[in-house]
Structure formats: C-alpha cells, structure tokens
Image (cartoon, rainbow, N blue to C red):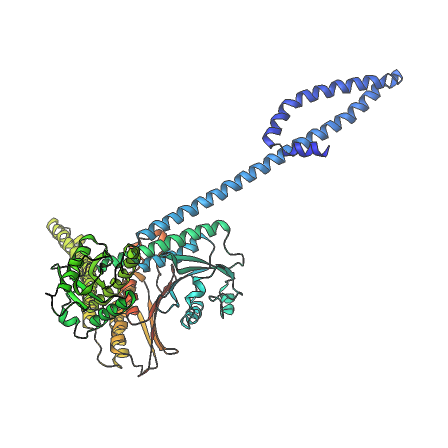
Length: 632
C-alpha cells in the first residue's frame, strides 16, 4: 500500500489534477450505488418502524464523512496549487534579479572595454562589486613585476582608517608570490590571509568578516587581484561569485589590451641612429652589444659574429660590435656577414646555412647564420654567427634561435628607449599642456565668441535686460578662462632650486588656489623644516596642481586639506577634499573617471613611488602619494 501511495505522490501535480477531474464523477456514482445497496441490505434486518430513523442516521454519518474527505482533498489541492504558485513567483523573482545583475555587469563590461587608461579600469573594477553584490568595500591590488611586491592601486567604499592600516601593511612588504599562487581565494577575517594579517581589529571595526579575491590574469599569469570585502562570514553566493569572476576576467583582458596598446604607442617614436664610432667608444649601448656578442659566441661555440643595426629612416646598416669579421668593411668575412643579414631582413626569418660551399668559406668557416632582431614588430637589426664546424647551425635550432633573437632584440629596444626618455617626457608635457588649453581656455574662448554674437543680436533688437544677463554670463566665462590660463602659466613656471623650497612653494600654490576659488584650504607639513629633493618636489607640486584643478572643476568641494609628513623613511603626501567624490560609473561617462589621475600616477611612478585613490559617491576624494625618503 505504501508503495502505491509513494508512486502516486511521484506523479506530477498537474497530471494528478487531470486524473481527479475524470475519476471524480465515476467514483461518486459507484459510491452512491454501493451506499444504496448497503443501506437496503441493512434495513431488511430491522423492523419497518426503524427504517426511516436508520436511513437518516446512516445518511448523516456517511454525509459527514464524505464532506470531510472531499473538503480535505480540496484543501490539499488548494495548498499544492498555492505552493506551486509561490515557487513560480519566487523563481520568477530570482530570474528577474539575475537578469538585472547581468544587465549591470554587461554595462560595466562595456565601460571597461571602452576605458582609455588603467586608472579608469581600476575605478570601474573597484566599484562594480558593490553594485553587483552586498559588498562592504573593494580594493584593486596589482603585483609589481620589478619588486615582486603587492601594490594597492584603487580602493572603494573603505574608510580612511582601514585603508591607512591596509596600505601600511602592504608598504611593509607582502611578496606577490603569496597572492599569485593562492588557491583559497575566499577566506575569513580571522584567517592567515596576508591581506588580513594584523588587521583583525580594524576589520571588525569596519564591519568586515570575509573577503573574496578575483584573479586578474595578465599574459597567461595572475597579475593582480580584485579583493571584495563582505560583512557576513559566508561572503557572496555562488551566483554572485560567477558574476564577479566574469568581472575579473574582463578587467584582466582590458588591462592586458591597454598595456599592449601602450607598447604599440612607443613605436611611433623614431629610433635615434646609432653610429659605429659612438657604440665602439664604451657607451652603455656599445657595452651591452659587446656583452651580447661575447655570451652568444660562447653559447654557440662560434668563432666569429656581429650585431648589426638597421637605420629604419635611411635603410642603412651599421655594425654595433663584431669579432673576427676583419678590420674594415671590405673584408670578405664582413661582406658575407652583411649579405646574410640583408637576406634575413628580406625574409623576416633566420637564414641558416648548415654547410658553406668551399667557394664561399672565408677563414675556414663551415656553418653560418643570420637572425633578424625584432621587437614590438619592428626590425632593429640582425645577429650574425659563424662556426668552424659543419652543421653547427641547422634547422633544429630554428625555434630556439627565434626565441633567443627576440630576447636580444628586447634588450636592444630597451637600451634605445632609455635614450628617448627625456624626449618623451617633453612630448608628454607638451601633450598635457595642449590638452589643458584645448579643454579649458580654447573651449571658454569659443563659448565667449558665441556669447558675443548673441549679445550683438540682443543689443540690435533692443532687448536690454537679456543683454545684461548675457554680459554677466560673459563675465563669468572670462573669469573662468583667466583661471585656466593662470593655472597653465603657473604650471610652466613651477621650479625648485633648493631642498627647503618645497614647503614654501607648496603653501604659495595652495594659497593662490584658495584666493582664486574661495575654497578653504589647509596645509600641514611635519616636520616644518622638511627637506625635499628639488626633482621630487617639482613632481609633487605638479601632482598637487593637477589635484587642485580637479577639485575646482569636478569636486564641488568646500574644503581641501594637504598633509605632508615623514613616516618610516617614506615621504607621504595626502590631498583630501569633502566634495562629491567620483561619480557612479554606471551613470557617468568613462572619460570622467580618471580626471587626470593617469598623469599624476605616472609622475609618482617616475619617482619610484605609488599613488592611491580612495573615493566614492558623496564621500569626497583622498589622493595619497608615497615616495621613498632618505634624509640628507
């Protein structure tokens, strides 16, 4: 019997209801026939005077029983149907929530893909988890390829106290290997996770119980993590984890794309021609080329070789360094080397001759090769090698030779780029200045030109009141243009000569800003007699100028505080305003996300330091610059 009941219960509800609709009339008819037959059989044994009372008693008992059974069945059916409707509503609500989250994630993905700077990507990646899940805060932490330490790039939603403690711990040094190889990406605040070590008290005060790290993959390896903090120990749900993983993957892909585009941008700068006399005279480039030649000859057991450079502008070749190729360019050995170098240039692939014919074999060479040196898609030169044994170079070496040549080319490319640093810095400053003039002064002048045309029409039409209002608007535009031009002029005049000039110039810059804008400012320098290297001080002044310009243009702040202090052999400068903070990216143009932060970050990095931004809607903005500091 139990098996029958179990089998019936396993049948879907809609099927059971359909069966009930057809079986109920038949069951009622059968029941009535059996009931009447049983009642007739029963009254035959009773006296006739009891027949009526017996029939009434039986009908009362069976009617109540039938009503109870029927009502129970109806109640069960209604309950099952109500439960099914509730489940359907719940499933629909869950589906609708997921749909909204997916649309939001798609929106963030589109904005991340359209971002034009790493800073914009960091900002988007930091704020997205707070809208996709019930996160408390977010940090974007990248791995420094040089120091192999963690770098705090962006924070969102965390308090200044927690951020200061976290940054202090990261600055103390956390090996990137801890996070690069970590498999436990979801952990509790009480765990031994490096991002929580020593911060349990601050985490509790912040209301943080757990975190999940989203790996950011760069070039097939983990290059950083997006750490998302949660108030509950359970952290995000499985569905939320899937959304966050998509966000992490999108962030990594976009960062890799941006870095690739940055490398490509370097190709727009011409390579300075390297002449043989300079490279042979003991310059850094010549030393590097000679080291390449020495190691390559030893590794391949070659007897002769040379590193040739190509001048892309003129198409001419020069020899950076050589060994056993003769004393002048007329030597048959040099002539053979140059011939193979040109062949490798034409094919863009290594040219290998495993066995030289007797007619082409100068100085006993038996095997030769020439491999193009290409970096970032550009041919820089070629490597030539010769050996006195047969098949010293053959087709089996092709792939290895390609890899080795690429490594040498990257080294040569970097050496050439070092010579362009000063020129690139000048170009960047000119680009920054032209952008500021275009976006500020030029736009204001164009707007005033339109206003003068409007004013002329109003005066001709005799609309005096409207003309006065237009004049007032023009006065405001003129003042704005004057402010823009003064900021640009002051930026060009910024200069420091002595180590004790920086605090003085910083206060002068901030005072002028306060007078022009009416925004209350405060400068705190500890100690008062702080000494700063003029080169570092100039960059810090330019960072401050850019930050104050952003406050004036975007923050809608009433107060700015700039604090400069020394902490554990580190110079730290913070610029804090009480403005509206960064906009929510889902509602803002991605172009508004960086506000010149990319330029400020580059300036900090040029000094061997780091720049961190902490902000949020209506939370103000805190820009923190930390530099190594060695007292004079």
